[in-house]
Image 1: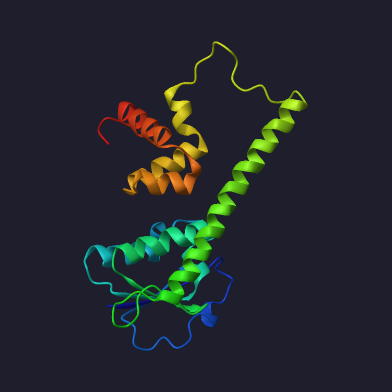
Image 2: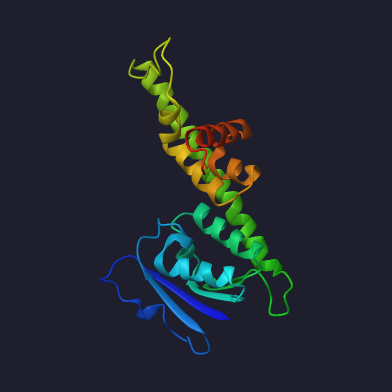
Length: 205
């Protein structure tokens, strides 16, 4: 089954630019939502996920690679997920595909994706560096004191932290520790702590 997918950010935007040469597709989906929403959590993205779960989707075509996510990291995660599920991705802008028509890996596209992966890793490292620099500067100005000595962080507060919420999200999607560690920039022990505390607070999940 072949599906063509497009996305626009607002209801006022016109999707016609993305909907060219779409003859021969079983479905043409257009999401009208922010790119910050996880691909498979979008209205049409969830329908694509259902087609994958049913073993029906073999070919997904998109107008441009940024339709898969807002950031380089998001795009790579979706690309890697679809590839692992055996779905052939064809991107028109730039011209990329994970598998050739004969089912073999497309070496040129693989090289470009590898470059994007390096950029994503660099992006994550720069974010961490800026965070550390910000903390150091705040300490120098006496504005950062961390948690008071003798106080304890509750398990619920620990889980409610933005980074730990992201870890939980990826755990729920069955991402391996190695992938989560690369994406979030955290240790295996942190991931395991998040998982353990979540199980303690919500044993039914």
